[in-house]
Image (cartoon, rainbow, N blue to C red; front, side, top):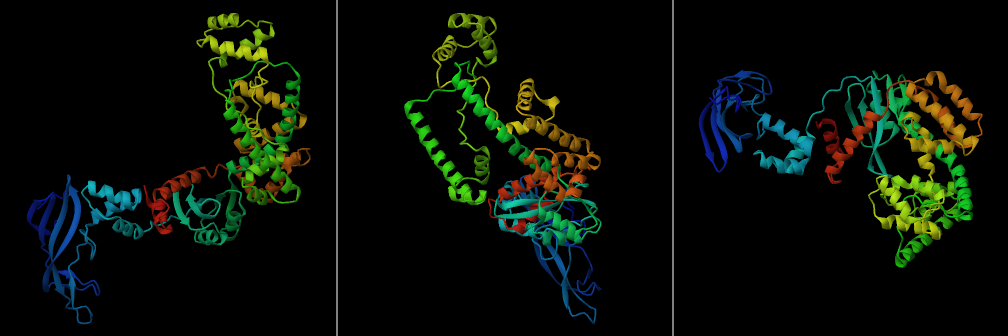
Length: 530
């Protein structure tokens, strides 16, 4: 008898073990004296004949293993049973009609779930469990779903088959950190049908789309809907960006005008010069962008939507929105290069303002402060200051975009660096409306962080509605339309964070299939892979 750690053949007598061409063959015969008929369940001990079953098993070290087992075929002696003979079952060793043992099947299933068909097949050869990709995929498709415990808190979110064209739905149990199901579409009816199967659901976390709001209302009307915090901040940030953009644009225009009229001052980080040929290419590309911008503005005057303009001009929807909201052609900033002079710019600015324009003296003073760069770098900088080089930036600070300003407004003030705090203070001083926008946004962020939406949301909405910040009014209009879910999102701890992580995992599994895996296979791997 073989050791059970190698092979469990308690009901068999091992006749021979041979090793040929890196394959171990174990020959054994059954010692059973009776068997149960699979149709009627009658016990029979009348032997009809014998036959061999050849089964692949787990490898021993690097050697593959094959079992050649002789089993009985019995007569069914029950008079009313239609079956005359039946084969002896091997419940602890292999399934009926299978050509591999149960334990080998389980290992191959796990390999397939983790790696997919092709990769698992390649690894199975190395491990001595040779199997084809098609055989592994058949195992995956037959892999049974585990029973789902009635969930209480679930989350719904979409994932892209093809971004912008086709989407599916992922459903997760937020309490048990478990994937519950994957749906092939992003349809309210199919999501609602799934939710109806589980009346135990009390809370549904979702994004701000109408699809899942409708699904939750139809499929689980008893459940409380919770809007995701990140999506709320994203929507608020988009509204805030539209609010800040006109103020920043006006400020930058005025600043540029003043700087052009003034004498050149110290540049910021070094912007590399371009050769005449490179400059020509840059200007050609700029002319193309200007032409697209002018075409977009002309189409907007004709009343076309952002999406229609994007399709006509050949740019993205967000690009069209940014152009139109800016009101002027957005120039591209040349890429700045880090320089060893950067830490000393404030000192050079101070000395320049004091009237010290001697490059050698400035260089000597810099070396005493730890400057390790070359004299040529200092020389080029001073020459550009003396000659008013038009290729040098006209001011020490880089103009901040509305997106960067939005990030500063949404961030915790105590976690900003000193430079970021100075930039934020400068922004708040641009206009009273900008300062008011900052105060309102920080109130909303604090409300979300402290989970005080139940007490403070109504007052915040009224304050924004009565403010002159019209760019924020579409945001609060959307909040009013989904107020109960938003209020729950600002009060409860549940969010889409866990589900977003599962979607990232789904994307990885999807890409491992190189776009060829069908939905049933993708679903099996997402739900059951470790």
